[in-house]
Length: 167
Image (cartoon, rainbow, N blue to C red):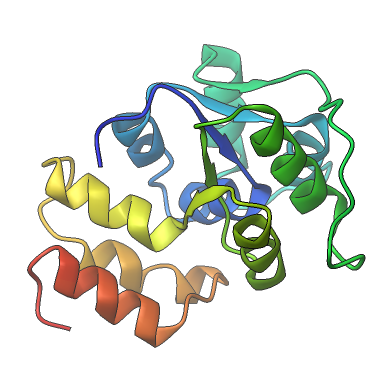
């Protein structure tokens, strides 16, 4: 996958990478990260969490930025999606050819059903390794669960295999 000019991110991947001090990997892999106002509200809540200051700094630096509210009319197949997932998918539908970074299982299924190209946090870490931004993906992936962010073992093993690390 070539370096993308534009991605739209859901809150989960932003929070996960921030919590483990690796938010900059997202910037290293993608030129610009866009979020909806709903995602910004989820990712920068009033409550503190480890890494929140890094995410706030990314917004201040402009490489993570809010985009206008999506105006596309669409009806999700899953009415139980949260506002962040709904707005992220709508923004991706409104921006053909963009990539959506999302980990939420229901959100990923909805995005796929709508024809949106997706990638997850684990794959972002894998791309960072392939681009030489980190020496190995495994140590970064292994820090996610202790930070409170669960990515399935099957996904982690697939990424490790893709980047030439033994699962």
